[in-house]
Image (cartoon, rainbow, N blue to C red; front, side, top):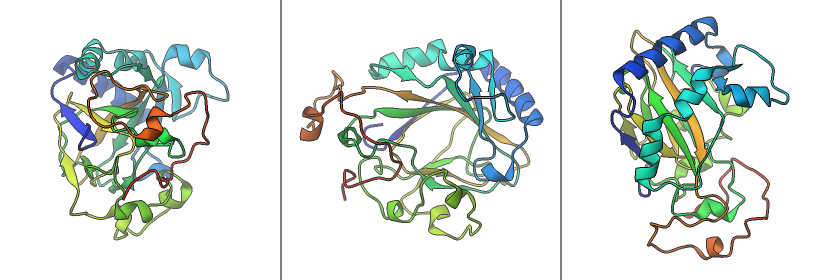
Length: 268
């Protein structure tokens, strides 16, 4: 996580729990199939915890937004909590919904992007992660059926792709049709993250990542939930490396306008 920006932890979910989530997600997707707007992700279905849905503002039931008790079961999974403890994660706040991303057969690759939105803040400089994606594949996943691919180290260092990729998930990039564009490239720096069903995939939101296309005969489903850790300049107790001066001087009460575009804080 510190050096590459991601890691894989084997067998966090049992075969039984994975199968249950596979059957549940298949039913949800069958009732809410992918739409062209999200062709590169496959589906973009947000499953809210029932508590969060009860507190909703400007949220309406739709094919891509709905409550379900399984959201809390995923977010609060006891072995996941133990993994976080073993890894030394602290001050954890989970997003209260799970995103169901399912790439259908013949689904195209997903473009290179990163999911961090706090690039205006000095917190973007932390050598440790502060926003992490926690995901599970519901089937064995390889390049053939659209596995995750990452460019290690890009959570800390600027890469040529940062200057080529439009703002993540904005209409501009969602409407792209040229799969020979650099934003879909088979970059030499990229590493495939192949996983077995039930493995946990952890990655820093700042990391450049994408997926391969799905050339198999079956859908490939990934469930992801975002977590914030070590917020507002908190320094992990296990960190023994250099700490950027901007982090030491960070005002935890100061608010910064969110942006998904890396600024000068991403070093060359």
